[in-house]
Image (cartoon, rainbow, N blue to C red; front, side, top):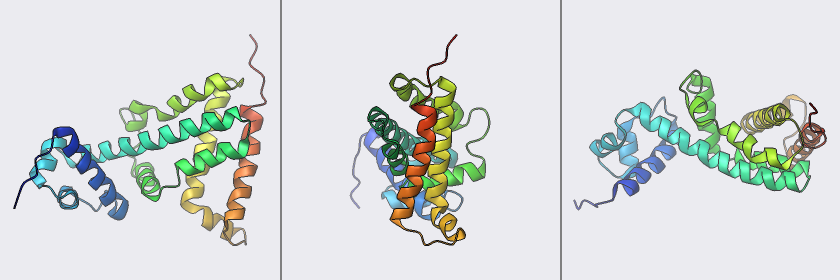
Length: 203
């Protein structure tokens, strides 16, 4: 068997991509380092060399997913806010959370408690703060309103991505793209009242 020599950055990226695929398919609670090594086509020893413990590769994949979602959402939100279009704002959020592998990882992290407590990834990375920092110069709303709008929008986006079909069926309707569009427009209008129409706070 011919061994392919890769530089450290390339090898690490290869392993992370493989780990994300494995976690999306099986979930971190079921998968192990050997599964990741097999998916990446490398030795178990190489995975251990770059990441050490299984928990560290889980954190690395989660940070990778969050970074991708955050960058996508922040860029799209700024564009949407600048056009004063609430539907575009919600489209940006929903697109950021539509990728099934990302949603599965995020849902697992919330339920497992991985995102809770001091030193957790949200505590270290503060991705929503980064999004608020990007949006703040583009609106007149107070910072606290901006932050709660982001929390509300992200919560709705994740929740609808995971269980939107179930919500619609529970209301007695059939899920459809049209219903999702109406929901995004409705939520976008609610959020615009706070994000785009609130005057700057006065001293």
